[in-house]
Picture (cartoon, rainbow, N blue to C red):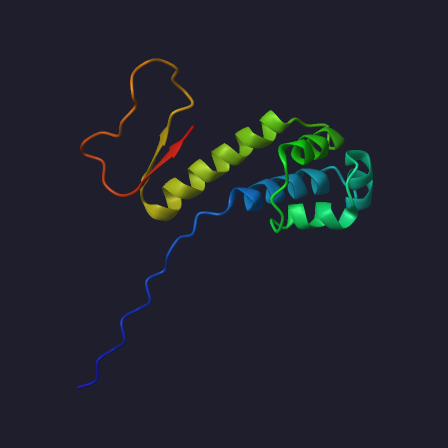
Length: 125
């Protein structure tokens, strides 16, 4: 009797933060109908570097992120917020786990997942 090989288990990989930032920045730029050259010049960086940032290949400094956001008429807080939401949604859907969002409460208590929670938990602060 022939045995079927077990199906390979698909593993979810949480995207790197630089990949999320790049995807968000590229989306904003293309929705505005602007070129890499235009945004790079306005941000004071090279076209090649902006392209690498948008493709998630480079880990930009906060100064570069701020410059690109300003060049796009946005803000770094908007970018970080959008990245937070995307990672939260991707993580909770992709792993079947839960995301414990610590950004919505400020206080002295420590937020903990419920005892009934199963699966991985991503802490976002």
